[in-house]
Image (cartoon, rainbow, N blue to C red; front, side, top):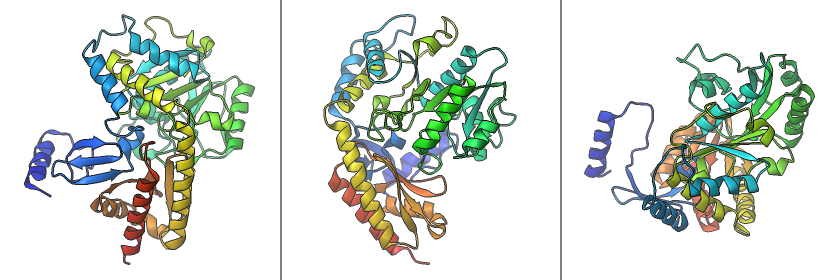
Length: 401
């Protein structure tokens, strides 16, 4: 580590509230799947800003859209129409089940909007939204309450009421929790933060049937799984299960802050002027970046290549687990949201593995206290996948008891 790196980190630590455990690096530049720090060291990025930079760092089309829009109009508020915001909404509606869109600044805000819309649409006295154990829906008080992981609740009690958590994968238990107060079921088609856990099609179909039977809304949180991450624009497309409300964010503008809530005409009508708002939601610069991002994602062959590279990556991870059975059992995931499932011996050293990979110049993370998670830019090459696997192989082979 250079003196310049140390100096910048010391300055940072003097002024920031300590909510993050940061890697010892000061990032200054990125291109494609490679980041460079202030000392000039390069890193192969299989974290992508936590599934945000779907097109990699500084994608030319996105950079051009940002610069051109910033030179014309940066902000006017949602009291006015803007061109990039309208173009973005049209693209999302044309490529999803939805008729209407609401823009926010993040996934948590999109989920807040979904929670408020579900309650406002539903009959008086129906306010409970059932989510799943292991889920993650955001850091605001309402989305923390909806999150089915107690570690995120600690110190913030009492949390807002109305968010029971059903056991993961147990449809009968979920049905038993439905009461006259229930208005919706909220879930991720694939849980990312709790260890890349897919919800199998039969389970999602069952949840859809419960919603239909009890007149509930089905909300899909696709903050992480949306925008091509699993090989289709939205993960729900692969399951044949259509939600009533969907949220997305993260990769929508390839690094600029934006979130979106999508829904039908009928449900959207519950929101009228003044019902809900976001000062910066759909900001012209972020919206222009999102339009450019979506056009790349929707280009012929792009998502098919995500599927192919995801399959290749999973095959390599499974082969890697076969070479290191003490620490790993195999892969799971969808598209380019993949995980290496760790054994008990591996779990006990999960963060150490992440740190050792960092030392080799490869960025990953430890998710759900269960897996090594890989969310590289969707433009990752097979050669870069091979480089990650080689580093993993070296790291696992170098662990000593």
